[in-house]
Length: 438
Image (tube, rainbow, N blue to C red; front, side, top):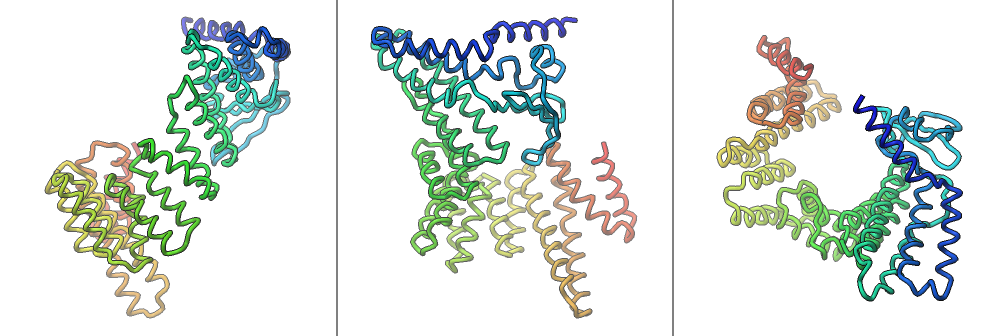
C-alpha cells in the first residue's frame, strides 16, 4: 500500500508541475518573448531568466507527464486521455523495444516494460534549448551584481543535461552525426559562464561519434582538446583515437610517424591499454621498423613500477601478437611470480594457446595434403590442451564472477572436444558445464 501511495503521489506531483500543457506553454512563451522585446523589461535580469525558464518549459511540455523508468500502467494514470495512436515493435541498436506513437512524441519501452527513450516529434518551439541558453547568457551579462549567478548556472547545467539526453537518443536511433552535434552543444553549454563546469565526457563523446561516422578530420580536434584538458578516457583511449584519426586522414610517412608518436605517448602513460598496444604493434609490423622499440617502452615502464604484474601481462600480449610464444609464456609466468593473485597472466597464457589452436584449425581446413593435415591436427591438440592449466589456475584464483564465467566457457569447449579420450576430460566438461548452468 505504501508503495502504491508513493507512486500515486509522484504521478500527482508530475501532473501538477506540468498542468499547463502544450497550449499553455506556447502562450507563456509568447508573453515571455514579448517581454524580452520591451525596452524597459529587456534591461532586467529577471526578464531573461524568465524567458530561459519558459523556453525550458516549452521544451518539456510534450513529455510533461512521462518519465524514464515509468511502466506503461503508471503512464496510463499520469497521461490521462493522452492515448497512443499506434504501437509497434522496433529494434534500435540491436535492442528490441515496444514503440508507442502519440501525436507529439514516441515512447520506447524496453524488455522490462519500462520507458527508456522519449522522442518528441512535435516540439512547442524549434531549438528551445539553444534559445534558453541564449537567454541565460543575456541574463548573466546583465547580472552585474551577481545576485542570480547560482540560478543561471543551475539553469545552464539543466540545459547541458538535456543536450546530453538528446545526444544519447540520437545515437540510439543510429544518427551518429546528429548525436555528435548534440554532444558538442552540451560541451559548449557546460563551458558557458557562469556554469563553466566543463563536460569532458560530452567532449569525448563528440569526438567518438564523429569518429564512428568516420569523419576523422572532425573528430580529431575534439580528442586533442580532451588531451589539453587532461581527459584521457578509459586506459588512455584518447591517444589511440587521435592516432586512428591521423591514419584515416594522412597516409603519408609523416602522418604515420605522427600517429606513432601519439601512441607511444599514450603507451608511456597507459601501458596496460590494449587499444594502444595493438595500434603500436600494427604500426611496427606495417612499417617494418624494429619491434624492439615496443619492448624498450615496456622496459621503461617496468623501471618505474618493477612490481607491477600488469606490465608483464602487456609484454606477454605483445610477444603473443608477434608470435614470440616462448617469450610470451615467460612474461605471463612472471605475472604470477610478482603477484600470485593476479589472474590475468594465466588468462593471457590460456588465450594465447587457445588462439593458437584456432589458427591451426583454420590452416588445417585449407590443407589438402593428408600428411600435412595430420601434422597440423596434432599441433592443434597440443595447443588446445596447453590452454587448460593456465585457464584452470585463473578460474581458481579470480574473484570476479564474470571473468570466472568467461573462463568456464573456454574450458567447457576444450574439455568437450576431448571428452571421449579420457574420463578426466568428461569430468572437466561436467564441472564447467554445471558451473555455467547455475
